[in-house]
Image (cartoon, rainbow, N blue to C red):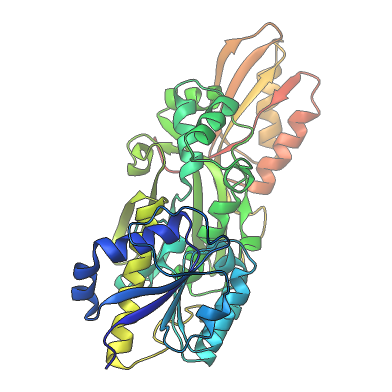
Length: 428
């Protein structure tokens, strides 16, 4: 029996240094849980001379083959991020029958089928708890703890950057001001596109949906809308109606087809998700036996993400000690269609600026009625120098019907501006 678990670490940046630190700091505790000590035998870096934020720095290398071809290394931890060279490195590790632990959501959302096929073919395990939710346990609960349920819906806040921006906008900051503050605090990248466009959240919900519904979902299957067009007025009016605005990732099965999307949405203030502020994340899972359960915590960061990686390493250690391989396979057992675009029924919130003229509200209501979209509320909020600001909330309506009504509004000469529509989840 092996006397230690030898780890090859691909990347010693934010997460990689956190993994090395946790293994050093909590080594005795981790060894007790794993049944075997762990050691980072080697870490791949780009620059050997760069200062490292690690207590006990492991041996460094700039040669990936010194890790991938080392027969003494049992498991490769990939925390480089991005598509390449991470994909090539992981495939090489699996083909060498090394187990792999990764935090790379982009790879899993794009190449999950290829990666799991390589793991199965070579009798290796591929673990990825850290790819969604950082330190929040969500992958293993979906795969194991909730496996006795038919999962009906998975939804939540899976991007801390946008949640921080929206939290600041609740206090009256503009989108641009809130984004600049997030960048200053280190929560947003210099190029924030992946976060604010919903791409990061789309990758994460694709992974969760694949597990929850046993079918392959990639990032390209996720309909997404970002937060770039939101105004503090949207959040203020939502608050008046009893809601908070969150960037929600949603996956559900409707009549045997999958609806997977990311979009800004109004959440009732009494819902647990409404109280998730700042950079925190939360995921709600609805099962037909358990009802709704929520997983809440730090969705990113050096040590929270490293915590998830170390949990996966302990699972790998258990497998090795028990002499088993290939236990953590793909769960995409079925082919399921996606719900037809435009037919998903959602409630909507819409802010308009209209010319202050007699009959204009009746004309707006008629446009929605023509598309068979029922209005739950029509509220005139304020007069501007050009006209009136109006907020509409609909009853559930098919996306294409709502879009048809909005298209009709755009053609009205009385319509001065149509702001970004928001979904409405639940009842206030």
